[in-house]
Length: 124
Image 1 (cartoon, rainbow, N blue to C red):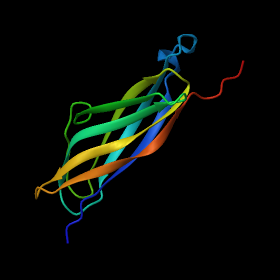
Image 2: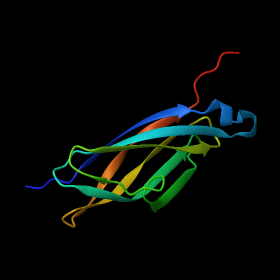
Image 3: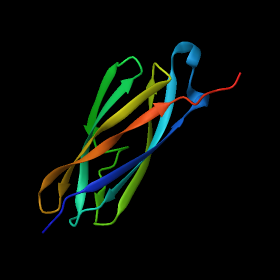
């Protein structure tokens, strides 16, 4: 029986050199690894992100592909990319879904688990 599954993991980092805390501008990079853990080749078609800052301001982002790509992944293959976002607060979170289509035409969603964006503690 065919299984349709992409597993998503994310690593984040605060970009101090691009951030301006005195202007409420905090920039973060995130590296996403998408692995086809199903049994059928499938293509990532589009994305939907929900970005929430520390004062619960919600931003929704939708679009085709990721960083200009719509990767087709065979079972066991993975695709990694780095992107970024800016917040008005030093902390926030992101989560979402990738919308995918398998080679046999089956459509499915790959959940992007919530991850935290946080400015590290600084010593003065």
